[in-house]
Image (cartoon, rainbow, N blue to C red; front, top):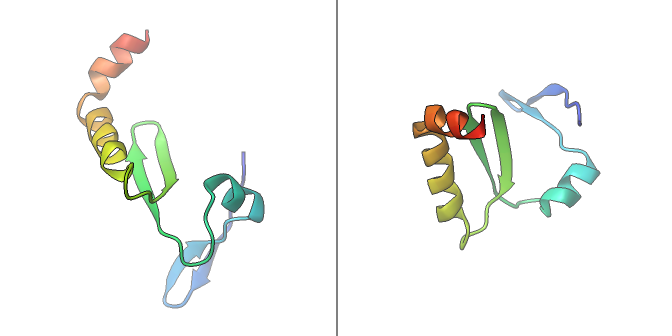
Length: 74
């Protein structure tokens, strides 16, 4: 688990990702990432043009069918 501190960035708030997290995400300065809200928390993922459509679909299915998925997990 990595703990991040919220800090002022310009007129807003943000978090600074430590180098080990950036390495795991395989991102560099200027890269784009997507943030997904799920029933279990937040997912931060590197934006990958070829895979982003599948990830978006999976996130939508998880959100829409969370009751069914929980039953399957039992």
